[in-house]
Length: 109
Length: 115
Image (tube, rainbow over all chains, first blue to last red; front, side, top):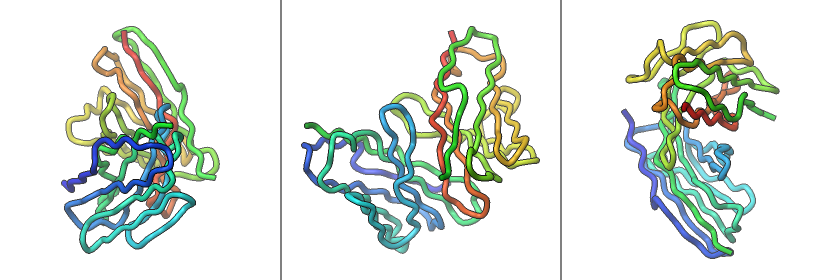
């Protein structure tokens, strides 16, 4: 099956700092999503981004499908950004997603 | 929009009992729903894919007779953990996709503890 690797596994930031999270995948995909899992376990959709660049407030994401990676940028981080960030990819006609192991982000005040 | 609910949010049961978890899409129709399992500090593991009106497709290693899935309508899927044992204790999460799209929307999860 497709392999999904996220880096770094853990990241600790001071409030106000910027960060970049990476997701590498081993095969062509037609669907890639970034999620934030909050401390209560709820997964929140951040981006649906199989290719290209999107921005939503302090967050932005870029997927370079031909090179099989995606980046999630968090600017001016806040303590509420803490949690686990997952990317999930889906190959064409697979009908299901494969999740990476996540990046655990801790933002300190 | 695209809200998914799960019930119950937390359940504690004795070993040997069965537990049913409901997953509902509140404001959209979901042709496909997914059930995941997540152990502490680990990623989500897909258990099965549930399509309305047909049998669920289980991932390799997931026991069909232990984890019964029923997708009775376009807004409801249920997961029943039969004869639960302590090793079944986990966080169970469902997701649903809006018909015709690939975007998954997740429920808040159900934390199951089997004593």
